[in-house]
Length: 138
Image (cartoon, rainbow, N blue to C red; front, side):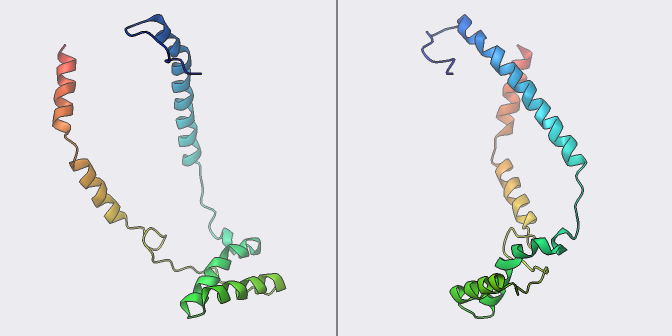
């Protein structure tokens, strides 16, 4: 429902109707944030879960990539791994060595921090703080 459409200009009671929807929404949002914090604080990493054979097919892409890096054309590598899965003799390794940017092996956190620092430095916080001080003096 659009509560702000077709309103005449100026202050009118209709805008007060937003409160009955807006304030409970903020309360719900606050509760969601609290629940998220509670869940995250109780999370535990299940190390070695991928060692379970039921997860073996998640490594099919890794095996295709290994073949491609060894010089096998992608289409042939994909077919070879697919046929191995279909025949029930899919061989895989749980060892992964990712090196591309953003992967587990190369998170690029220093570059991300540098970009964030650069973005923050581009904001004019002095004008913002001055405006807040003026508002608080009034």
